[in-house]
Amino acid sequence: MKTAVKDVMTTRVIWVRRDASFRDLAAALRRHRVSAFPVLGDDDKVIGVVSEADMLTKEAPLGGFSGLLHHRDAEKARGITAGDLMTAPVVTVAPEDTVEHAAGLMYTRKVKRLPVVDANGHLVGIISRADVLAVFDRADEDIRREIIDEVILGEFLVEPKAFDVKVSDGIVTLTGIPETNEVGREIVQRVRHVQGVVAVRDRLSYLSS
Image (cartoon, rainbow, N blue to C red; front, side):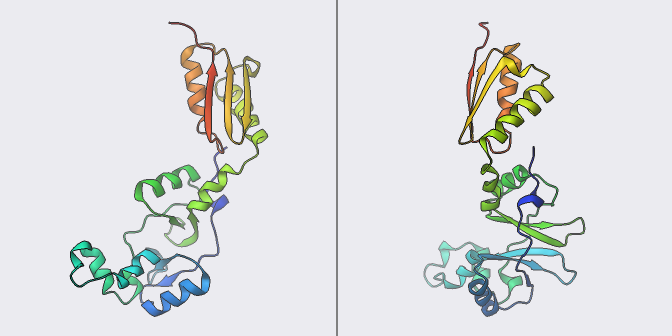
């Protein structure tokens, strides 16, 4: 089972226009208790994201310490609207994308949240790191059943009785004798990507080469 972004995203999103003032942004951050806003253009498409970090450049020392700031940060420190402060181009995901894909983008792009947009680029939600990590809150028995029914039997066409699958707190322990060493290693690798699996303990009995 692959969880889609639409299954975990937040649909009530606080957004701002490009011309929203710094003061309005600061007030909205406090009022709505969020840490960032998607920024919408005139066509209602997402054009950027403005976060607390973007706004904090306003408080950064610009005197003798300006060399510590990147050029873009210095520009943001002088910004007065969401358009001045936002990070762009924006990284987005689609509702049908997998949570795994969203997690990969967050990791590689070093962002805490991603706007979710439809095929026309319009905002439909937002997904955060907390939303991504929620997929690990899955019952051990559900994980075990998927490994047996969908992975071992469904994908590899192997008799499940050849393996013993135990799951505790998301940690999977596999024992048994695979048909070949290659099949055994492929099963272990596939199990690592089952939704909710934290780790896999490979206790399979491999044939001596």
